[in-house]
Image (cartoon, rainbow over the protein chains, first blue to last red):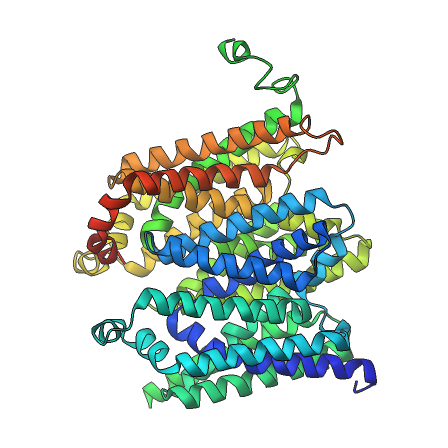
Length: 263
Length: 300
């Protein structure tokens, strides 16, 4: 399980889990799960497009997820956010189906982008993953106060001169970066589950933002590490374990809150 | 005859006589009408995420059914009914709580989809199953599917009509509805049942992408022009059917566009039409809607 070729998988998934735990806290707090689903899924169209023109996958993912973030933010100014997100994801996926129809030998690769091939991470993928991950965490650190205020009390934030629309755009751009970082190594399904599951469970246990964020990182690490170990021993897809552990964690958190309320 | 008179310049030869095209036109129209009716309430209730998620969640049921040799449609329907129920049960009233509940259910279901698809591909050693379950294909539908689709759509629309008044009231003003004795939970579950049926039938026949596109796009466009529910439903259904037929036509024609004769996918064209129509409506009505925003907020 700790043989040389597995070391890359452990390192990549650890980086992804830390970043997902930090960003996931705000994803859950702001109710941005749909965007966290739409950007990684839609951006896979970028990967398909990149393979069509011979560009690198990470470039395609980056361009598409950034355009998607800007698209959601600008459509969201004039419509409800969930509607804007839905329109953005179908547009991106529609383009994706067009790109896929133009190539012929892509089916196994789509499967790996959707469900992740963390066990096949190459060592030259680690450096870009770590670099983009660092940028994401730094962005959250810089935005921390206004982001927290506009997520928890939008009206108060507006009164203090924090523009909700700008914060929303900034946060969507962070999710776009997370997408670019994580999709090549863990796939769209895993990064979505990691952004939502651990953070949602963490919020059940504490109301303090920094504690919840730390707890969310811990849960994300535990989730991804045990998922890799289970996947390695059982030979079943890792996405299944991440999704199932996320749901179990959230259910545990919710029942813990419910019991505390009763007591 | 008039249509034929417009000329083969627009419609390439053999369009109406091709059996796959006929089935696609009929099934696509049914899916568009059901999506339009259910879509209006989905948009008004702010449940686009649930509507989109069910299209993905159903793949878990579809791939499980594929595994045991049952028609994927039944797996889709069963899975979506369960998922819709779970979402409503764990969902909190506030939209943000609902967002998380939908996300958790989606994550878990996609995990199961990964598992079943893994079994599917290892047992049949092909990834074609994955692609077919995920993207659907409107041109490869057997005509025997039409009766099943009709039954499902009648159930979905019937459910929505049955709930029409309490659903409308609880969507626009939950407090008022509760004060009038409407059970919000009953209405919520009832609506998710019709949403689950509508999304299942469209996701299986025309694919997950088009399912969301036809559910949200036409409804959001129609609500730009009218705030009357009845006319919005009719407009959404009409826009959906128009976009689907135009998309099918363009996709059929695109076969002749390139020298390599590789047609472009229906999904791309329908999505493109839906999106362009929405943007046009957005530009046309932009200032009016901005002025009305407070009422839109109130509807949450």
